[in-house]
Each structure stands twice: as structure tokens, then as C-alpha cells.
Length: 422
Ligand code: NAD
Image (cartoon, rainbow, N blue to C red; front, side, top):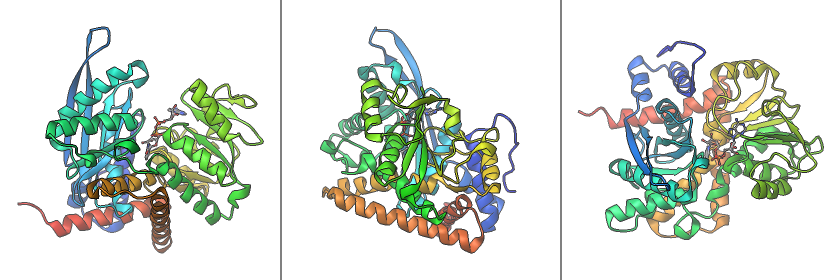
């Protein structure tokens, strides 16, 4: 295979991302040079973020912004605040954004940003200072025609408002298209907050039907109860799927009769975790992944389905709400066992689709109704699902390889048409 990399215990998301690209390049008959061109990030910026803490002390944090590809348009991708952020993780996430944007036919390349920080240990004022300084440091490479950040793990609409304001102050005028996922009162799109989860559920329902399972009688487990997992649980339950289990970083809860998702959301708003939800049994976080359900939605972090637990997964369908939740080894084990995996670059693309709608609305200063946004999102998700199905059928490929091939081909064509400079 092209770009062979060592297989070892310390593999991370970047190894999986590069291996997926190498497999797609092999399938598409691309040479080593094309693979290298598609694998290498166009730009990487690492910055120090000196922070004055509320107690007057100074702490220096590290942030990154990686623009993996710019061939099809400005870079697009989220900003993550997590203690686990490192450059290789950001590189992997940026590469997946390139394929996701190409798969959804959005006029973007791919990027990702991250700051190595545990946001739960900092005050809101400190997080604002971190965000503003990080934005100021990466200012030369971002903007509506360069690279448009959005929320990801540990960041939200407030983070985006601070980024937009910092960029706008530096430029002397308000630039709404700087970031997406902003508050609606500040040029955010109606429907953006729920878009990723809605997209996950659009493809989950299509995939359940594809597997011959009636969504109305299906059962599901959702890992992660943040911006993606929580909404996914809500829309699944609203669609008649019985959500038997949900988890967050503090633990997991399970009920054989199905969780009352709106009540669970109220509980999380009050207590800050799913743990302690009345009437549900606390189970081990890992146990959620191997429950006897039709549908598993990992919507937390990378590499949670791995060689050590993939053989025990009982779900017939995995829909990747998170980016990179399934390692390459787990992918092979699950495929061999006939488990259908809807890959991240398709399953969770609803967020970037509505981010694109938000950017379009901001650039035109003309706002759509929520119904317009939801309808256009549904069309985009269904179209992408159909295209991946067709590619999978025609080439005899699993959905991940089919989706990656489709996306990589579009990016490679853009490279080819633009030519190499000089
Ligand atoms: P978030 O910070 O809002 O939520 C993350 C959730 O995962 C939290 O509930 C956290 O407690 C939980 N979690 C963390 N580690 C866990 C573990 N080991 N077991 C169980 N739960 C755990 O983040 P988010 O925006 O919901 O992002 C989740 C995933 O979805 C990430 O992979 C992200 O890249 C991806 N994603 C997000 C968006 C978006 O629009 N927010 C779009 C596409 C993809």
C-alpha cells in the first residue's frame, strides 16, 4: 500500500487517517506523488498562548491550526479545546475535514484547530482571553476567504462570538463570515446548533432501513452527550428509536425500556452529567459500546472502537457521530462481522453543511428560515448518502472506502485542474 506506516500500539488518529487516504489512492490508481500531495498539510501554525489567570499568575498554553487542503476553496474546520489536543490529532481531523467538505460538495478545503486545555478548569473570563489571544495569533491565516473555524469539542457559540469579534476589531469592521456556529443574534444560522445531530439521524434512519430494520422498532446506544450525542439521542427518540443507553466522560446510564431523552436532557442541564438519572442503571462506560442494540452512535472522541473491543460490539449498525471513533483495526473486525459502519465524513457532515449555509447567509447578509435550512440539509444528507451507496455498490467497497474514494477523487481533480505552481 502507498505510504506504508508502521503498525504499533501507539497508533493514533493520524495513522488511521493516512491509511484511509492510502487505501483510497490505491483503489483510484493514484501514484505515490499524488498520495504525498494529498497527504501533506498545506499549512500548519503552532502558537503560544500566554494567559493571565484570574489570580494574576501567568500560564502559557499551546494552540494549533492546520490547513490540510485549500484546493477547492477556503479551509473549513472546527476548533477543539481539550487536554488531549496535540498536533498529530489536529492534522488527522484537518484531513478528515478535507474529505468531508469534498464529499458534501462544499466549496472548501479542510482545516482544524486545537488548544491543549481542559476548559472545565478555567473561568469564562479566562476562556475568553485564551480565545482572543489564540485568534490574534492565527489571524493572518484565517478569515472568510482563507479559513473559517467553527465549534468542536470544548468550544461553543460563545467561543465563536469572541473569535469573530477579535478578527473584526483587528480589521476595523464586522466580518460575520469569519467563523460559523455563532449565536443566532450575531449572524449565526437558524438550525446550526442541531445540524450535526440532525444529519447523524438522517443517515442513521436511511442506514437502518437499508439494513431492513424499521426505525420505529429499533434500539440505540449513544456515546457522548455533548453537542452531537445529545441532539442525536433527542432526534432518534423523536423518530421512534428507543435509546437504551447514553454516556458522557463521567459514566453511562442504561434502561432496558428506553431512556426518557427529554427528561435525561433536563437532568444533564441540572446536574452536568447523565450519571444519576433517576430510573436508569449506571453501567460501565465501555459496556455501552457492546450493548445488544441495533444502532451504536459513538459521538464523543476518537479511537473508542478498537482492536480490543470491536469483536464484542453487538450493534448491527455503527453511525459515527464523532470524528475517527473507529480505528482501522476495529473497522476490519466490524466489517468482517457484517456490521455496517456509516463513516464520520458522511454521518456527521450535517454540521459543516449548515456552517456552509451560515457562511453563505453571512456573505449575502440575507437570512433563511429554519425550515429552509432544515430542508436543504436533508437534501444534502440524502444526496451524499445516495452517492456513497452507489459508489459502494459499483466498486464493491465498504461505505468508508467508498466515501473516501469519492471525496479524494474530487480533491485530486481540483489539484489536477489547478496544476502545480510554479
Ligand atoms: P462536546 O464537547 O460538546 O461533547 C463531547 C461529549 O463527549 C461530552 O458529553 C463528553 O463528556 C463526552 N465524552 C468525552 N469522552 C468520553 C468518553 N470517553 N466516553 C463517553 N463520553 C465521553 O463535543 P461535540 O461537539 O459533541 O463533539 C463530539 C464529536 O463529534 C467529536 O469527535 C467532534 O469532532 C465531532 N463533531 C462535532 C461537530 C459539531 O458540530 N459539534 C461536527 C462534526 C463532528
